[in-house]
Length: 171
Length: 138
Image 1: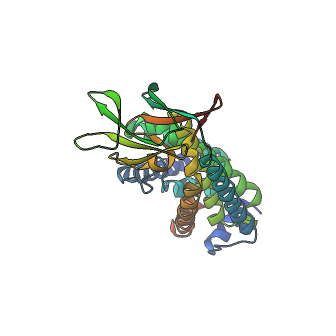
Image 2 (image 1 turned 120 degrees about the horizontal axis):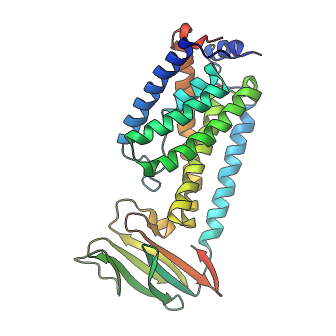
Image 3 (image 1 turned 180 degrees about the vertical axis):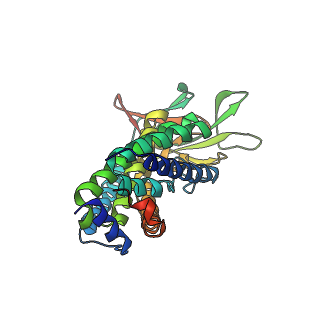
């Protein structure tokens, strides 16, 4: 995998897109009022796109950069949630895509990523607030994540399908 | 299958593959386990509870007797009074002790986490239940 100028430029544009989506989403009120730290993670569709098209290594740098830059625009309080959710969902999605992919669809990969991401967000909330009682919300959080995951999965498929070939063909 | 073939495959709009069933079943099992866990956690009874505000214990009472308490914040101080009269108070949680269980039944906080979780994030307030010297959250 050569780190060509074209590759870096494309990744930078995608990072900018992901950040814009991330910031717009952080302006919306929480969808689950009982668990304000849980979110759809619309920017995850771009992360999944990067994992699929650019591979595991670039995906990891992308997730790190997205969360660090996102923290500059958002709050450092949210950073703890974002980095935990981002890294854990990256690991799950990357492993599934790399080793199991044609046997599982991109939608299922995205669902797994969303569920893991929101579970780790809840765990971070439990650790930060020292409130084990928040674990009671996990069933609701998981059910919500399935819906979010399906939505993000469809978005990623559409991204891969309709973004121009010169973006998706990086071999 | 190399990455180019994988991407061509995604382009063909495959929204379902046989392995998806395993992923979905795993997620549903996970939800089941969490539901069971939450259910068991809610069943716990205690003998004594503490009200905690900003990580400090502000009030403690027995669970043997049914009662109402109002926790409220006044000038940045967490205060507790008996009874269920919340009129004129701001930033309050009404706490009910019934059948050796304690729960929040009314609050003016924006999220309503405290009704299920006994933790109120905006008020930095939580309830801890003690049973036979063992500590547990409800």
